[in-house]
Image (cartoon, rainbow, N blue to C red; front, side, top):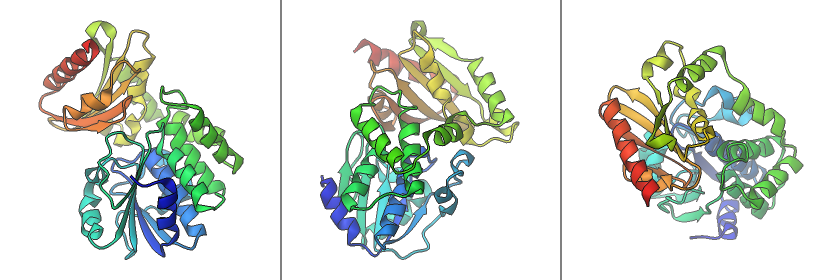
Amino acid sequence: MNTIEEIAGVLSALKSAVIFTHTRPDGDTLGSAGALSRALSMLGVRCETVNDGAIPAKYLFLDSMRRILRAPTLDAEAYICVDCSEESRLGALESVYRAGARKKVTVNLDHHVSNTRFAKYNYVAARASNCENIAALIRALGVEPDREAADCLMMGMVTDSGGFSHADVNGDTFREAAYAADHGADPARVGYEVFRKQTRARAALYAETVSKLRFLLGGRLVIAVIPRDALVRRSLGADATDGIVDFGLTVDTAEVSVCLLEVRTGQYKVSFRSKGKVNVNETARRFGGGGHVLAAGCMLFGPLEEAVERVERAVSQDLEE
């Protein structure tokens, strides 16, 4: 793996770059891209950021998020992936990345323990958020982030750390958050926009889902199920489900919280959260997914009750290990 200084050297020599974010984007991948793009632009590197889908409305309070494209328009010298553990996480843009990877400089900047080191240059450091890595990289590039870049950094740190509440938060997390705040980031604004602000429709979805939580394994496993219809009848997108999985961990007996979001009939996007006793990265990997020790995900196919049973069996085994 490359050092942060080596990565900075590669990036500072570029003339142009496309920054790729992962499919179904969260605040960390978007914040990483926004902050890095601003920093590279200060060095005279022409940049654009891409994502294969619509950017969730709660992130559009930042100007950088409104400039993200669905596909590259720039024949750039480099392709940079942020917060992506593997190429498949790019979704519909995987083929675009792979095609360009044969003739371009490729860089992989991530914090997932499951990262496959798929680029020519790789910097992967397991931290509470990838924006912590990006903050360190910006310092190595020798530029001072402006307020937009600082807000992007803060957004990623706040969202991926669960408001600085996850077990992998440490002193380095707060030092990087302080770095962002010192450069103008507004944590109160960021926290409100990404965590507390919601429509009445989303509030109703949350209330309905939480009222139907399933408590399994003596309450050590909490499962939330979100049928596709619950979104459709409220005209909500999948981003409206963000944060619901975290509620299960507030239950005192819970060790693992899981959310099953129906993507289409017979297909469920599964999100795992753990208090620490279970490594949910390993749990998700059994089903072809992955992520972090405390937060991971995968896809399951088949009837709902079969999916619930498979999750329950896997978590039960992990709790006994």
